[in-house]
Image 1 (cartoon, helix red, strand yellow):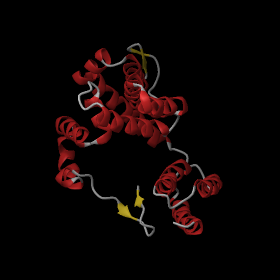
Image 2: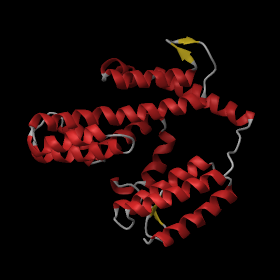
Image 3: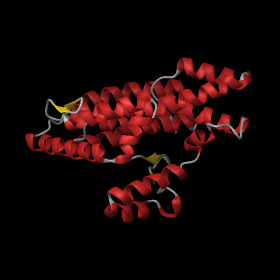
Image 4: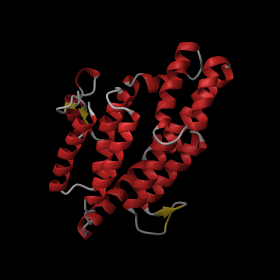
Length: 253
């Protein structure tokens, strides 16, 4: 997609976002996806990508930040407490906290405390939706970083070209690069060592079938009413094809 064509498409989306009263952070997150899609498919150069990102930052500054009402905040707090109780009562979650790598267990426990407003299991403050969202982000990041580092270390131990690739990726890893590192290391490990002990972990970043089945099992156990809708949207074991924008890029909205 040419630079001007992409800019016109983003301008159209910006006007829709402004009329709908969308939060600037939500708008920016979605449109950055479109920009990344164009870069990855080599239809947008890195220099043009920087130009569009700068334009996007300017447009985001023009969108007002909607203020939450007291009722909405109270509803969010109630949801936090409900989710926190479910996680506390879930036997699988307790097993995870006790047996998974300490960095992951720590972040999950911190999320539960943020949802419930507790510290070391003792009620100390009202739940904070904002703190819970920030802590959820930290948990997602560590769930990606720990496997990424483990897979990269496995390649480094093998030495050679794959080790050099893994080391160069590790020392520059940040933000969205962790997913690139995880996928790249997983594919290289599967190709280089088909019988490696970490191949089941690597498979999670190459094939999503196992993740999908575990997700279905979780929904079936905790939210049975939501399972028919999930199956309808993901028929035949495959995710529903994304909607197409006029540019041909998937529309994440």
